[in-house]
Figure 1: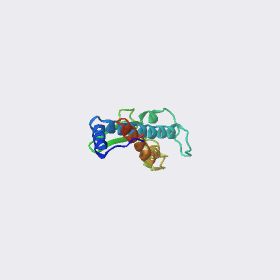
Figure 2: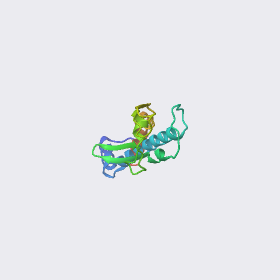
Figure 3: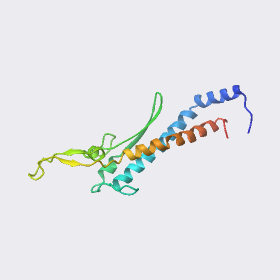
Figure 4: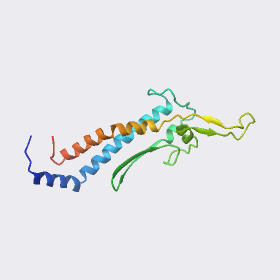
Length: 154
């Protein structure tokens, strides 16, 4: 392993910041995390994984409405996932009730005039939880990769 003076280390670290290597690494990490969240959410909607509370798929619109996004913010990078159409997907009004559960009141039919309790069937939260679990490892890997690109580390 090559020796490096504190001044050389400082210069290389400044170069990593100036060239955007660190910021690019954090965006790569956020993309990896967001893809993982997306994969888990879509598997929970359509089947697969170890969930016993899968949703019945009729049209696939809920799965199509799941979108992820990564953006740079002032303090770093943000990865998010959402469903229901506000991310540009198909408008799916029932996305929230499946995720959070709650009462549904039917508008037609006498037999269904009282509220029905819809149980929680989370499909986004498990993906977010998995993203949080892997975030430290993924960020560390990408940060190290960024530093190696400017000659720091091995």
